[in-house]
Length: 121
Image 1: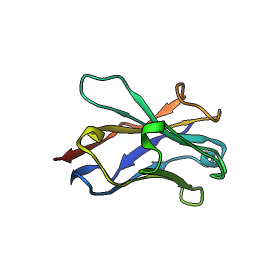
Image 2 (image 1 turned 90 degrees about the vertical axis):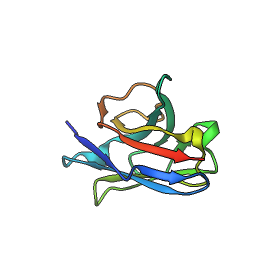
Image 3 (image 1 turned 180 degrees about the vertical axis):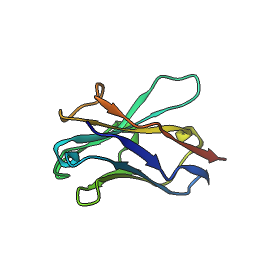
Image 4 (image 1 turned 135 degrees about the vertical axis):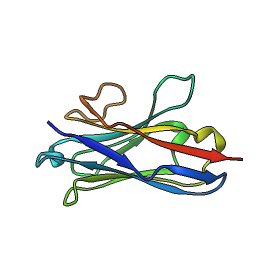
C-alpha cells in the first residue's frame, strides 16, 4: 500500500512556472511507476505524464510535451512535475498516482487528493 500527498499548487500568471511534488509513504515507492493527471472543472480527468519505477523512462500526453517534465527521487519517495510556460487552460486539480504497470495512461491503483493549479491570464 502506498499513500500519496501532493503539494506545490497555487496561483500563477500565464507564462509562469510551478513545480508540483508528490510525497509517497511506504518503503515500496521505488517499485511503482508514477503518473500525473489533471481535472479541470466540468471536464474528465486527463493524463499528463508518467515515469517508470527507475525514472529512466518517461511518457507524456502530446499537449504537455516540451512544457512539462516529470521526475522522481526514490531516495526521497517523491515524484515531481515541473510545469513551464503555463497557460490558463492548464488550470485544474492535479493528481499523482501510483501503479505497478508502466506505461499506464488510465488505470492506477493509488491516488493522491490533488493540488489546485490556477493560471491567470
